[in-house]
Length: 347
View 1: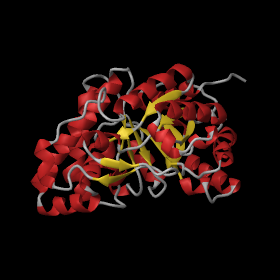
View 2 (view 1 turned 60 degrees about the vertical axis):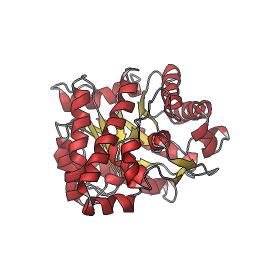
View 3 (view 1 turned 90 degrees about the vertical axis):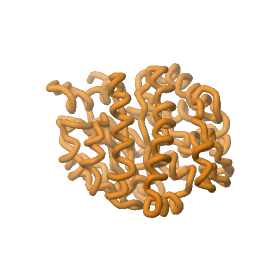
View 4 (view 1 turned 45 degrees about the horizontal axis):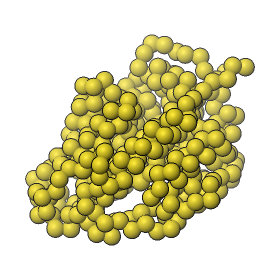
């Protein structure tokens, strides 16, 4: 049997969506979203993982070598931009970083903020360096970035409760902030494009588990489309991930023009298939709780359920709905890739 690489499997998924080709491949492409769970493979803490790019690279390479995912997601944290813009962060030993002081606790300070330079400011240059170094080592699997979208940056700078209050009381301010954050998202994306890497944006707080569809359409969709249009002008595809429940905005997500959308477990995958088919590659949506509390049989059934509603010709990539927990046992991540080989094979 011919051995296929991760890059070949992922390429096949994109061809099924965007061309008339139906390339023969052994199985559906598959990968878990891995980041904070990886440093345990080299005996490092999450704090070391986030602050030392060498530890970040070593952890990612260790994850690739153990699990052999078809996409190696370079998941660091989504506070890189806001840190570079003036937030003060706290780095616990074994959990993700959090903001302890916000650059826009006083909303009036927006006019004095300057865009961060991804090649000079904060940890942004370290992330770019880690992308380059990992791609030198991992060559037969897609090594993909994940960076913050404008709504994630806005919430990071202002805080969710404040920003949602602003949306009701001072919508003009929210648009001003989103224009600024969109410029920042594009600037970081441009730094990736300079390295010939297409950006993937994560917008966890754009979920309808947190905001209404109206807020998405009024305050987020126009800026997502602006980002996509900007990079389409450079012939560069864009990915978009939104956590949580996104059923009411699936059509909007696809209408941004993104190349791929990634959906979480609370989203109806069958509905997402219908909306995305022929327009965007669909990624998702195995529940990440299975990597902590689930059995192998429960994980297997969840994967079978996903494959049942995402047929072979739909341009689908089997993946977790969100990031695997930092405390997930490596054995359960092994299960996911082993089961992808078992249940994801094409006849």
